[in-house]
Length: 616
Image (tube, rainbow, N blue to C red; front, side, top):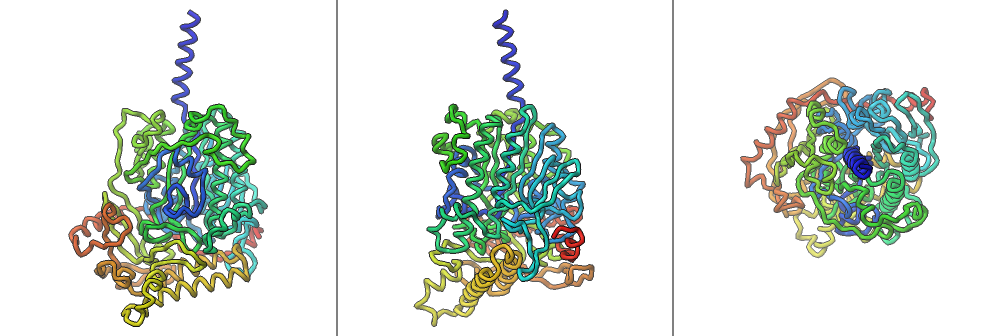
């Protein structure tokens, strides 16, 4: 009888354990492209053994899409909606009154309702003008990190112009009860984030599931790696890439140390998710080789990023006797501790960053009916992730995403004052609007950024006098060279931190705007068909206020078959003009049904505000 009772109790215990929601740690990397993590890179010049180990132990997303800029991606992640349906299609500038609308639920709010302790450590960038916009009021029991995006890694100061005093110190610790502390965290941002996450994990009670959202400030600029991380990157000759490498190496070490803590304190019922927020920016060291484009473009290099999901139980299966704390202070990577693990599991169907909301909800045992009432764009793709069989309901039908909105913003709602749309259906991808940087970017063996124009000039040096496009090619080249020279000079005088906001303006606004006014790169380089130009009427806001004028705007139009042409080299618009209306109908429906958009472009006078708030 005693044996029977023990068997029943054990069975009940196992049942309860299997139904216990998992702990979930979501790592969001900043500005990390397809060539910036070694497991996913064709050039493999940055070593990320710990990120690689977790990727190889889990399920890699091979068709994983985000938005081309950080604010829209973060809004989409937390709300499960396309960025346009969250009202945030463009990046938030300093001092903006805009933010994530309070009437749109977040995944953290939902998890809170289902008994999760929710914490966020890192970069918010979804609004801070009112308390109700900040993380502690959007479903996080605890938050520490930066509200914006551009703080100095050490001083946490943020500058508008490098020759002026800093605008503010951007580091805060806040709780859902309304208490907060604003201070200048002295440790490097990546190390401060790591230590805080470790403290949360080590002090967390085992009876309550844990959700930690870890949006690193790295590898976003300012490029200020710790010396020990930079030392692992001295083989890279291009200066921006070398500094950027040091930032990525710091993230890799951080994830290793957090993994040891999770293994020790949280145990096997823990899931890791790793994602980037947008493609790498070559002007700040990121690369997306061999894909076209970069951050702030709708090409694959701007919106297709590394992403994967794994679970800690795999580490237990590998080496159950390991005491992970033995290795915390060492440089020994995860694979040497837990043993080699190559599952070769890949999810090859479309996956959008908005899909994490319902997928996480499913893994957390939140009823499907609750999520369906929220009217989100994301799909629950948990049943297509085979490594997570023990978490999912095998009676549910596997959902496959066949189409996705990749980009949507209008000129009068964007800081760039330009239209841009992108949509994918199965293997076909449609882009219409103003492309800010049409270049391909490649690895460089010297300091100068290596893009399409430089490659063609270098390869055709003997044919310059017979080259009819020489003037335009040289213009591309000189804009890149002069822009980089200006940045290097200003960095020498002011330093990475104070210069960074101005550097972003120079690269992502001025230089990219010049690129768009030159001969279309597809036509210039002679590798692609000419793009048809389409006249389109729309209301264009000329001065960030309410005076609208009607302009005749030229849109570039692209159509690619990504199965046959993954690097977007052959525009199919001339061959399949009948398909354009299919995509335009999809985009027009979204335009008609979207909610009011936040005034992301509206910037308040910053310095006076921060002085009055005693934040300087």
